[in-house]
Length: 387
Image 1: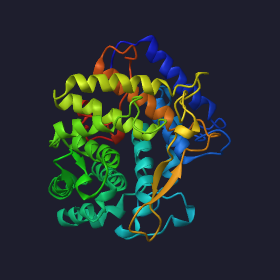
Image 2: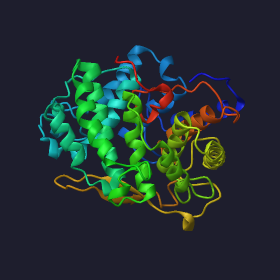
Image 3: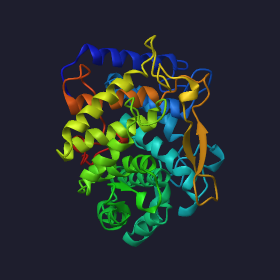
């Protein structure tokens, strides 16, 4: 995503990398904590890779250092191909219905390996039951799409793994299976009245938005047409709050989700263009309210907010044996101020706003790797099928 490197870009880069450097543990490449006071964290090391990659830092590492960093993730892979934080599960095989707690974790490990340019040791054999059109179709449709957010997360993880199986291990049937299995299922779940997934089944607009941003990257990666884009514009704009955020008090994940949809909708349609651009400028000003005043990372909540303004954000946890995700509420603790995710999602969303608007003062040489699907957009989709 080449552009004129602005002073704003340099500041965003310095602020983001400042937190990455502060969370580094030891001298071994790729070992990071997620937030102050913790030990090594998968999410710290995974998000750090994306932040460095966004600003071109991974390209500066030697192949040896990238291989050492990648081993942090490949060590988490089981012989069956999925990824688990539990070493005792290395040889455990799981049926498809038992994979719910592992999809998101597997997705993150795969994305981290893809930005590092490495592949894992074991073939993704856990996907074999889904390698038919009918099986994949039924699997997508089985979720309770009244919680579009939780269902969309799982489907994005599955698509991530299928793309990796195609690109790393030469499974040439993946595109056909997805086109005739996943795509029709998703098309049937799209609500043409809102342009979101799941709202016709009971998801409210914010939940529908947070589900939709997990589905649309699959469409962009595969070049599938996105229907009801104008209704999607209406719904996305309706989710934005008066201060430009997409969650009360601001929250890295929902805020990025709103920015992602605005930037991509602007590529797809001229409908309500002035409204979209105004909303994008409000969002940019909101995102900057999360910039640490000391130049070390991005705050969980707006600088001008108080705990009474915050609404804890649900993290959807799939517990073993459960058919539905459980909402675990987080981010309301005033003593927690920064996590690594914010130093990825806020600069990433600013990069999208800079691309969309072109005159923000934050244009720069952001590197968006579409193999990591949160960074796959209309303008850099249809990824080349290489490792």
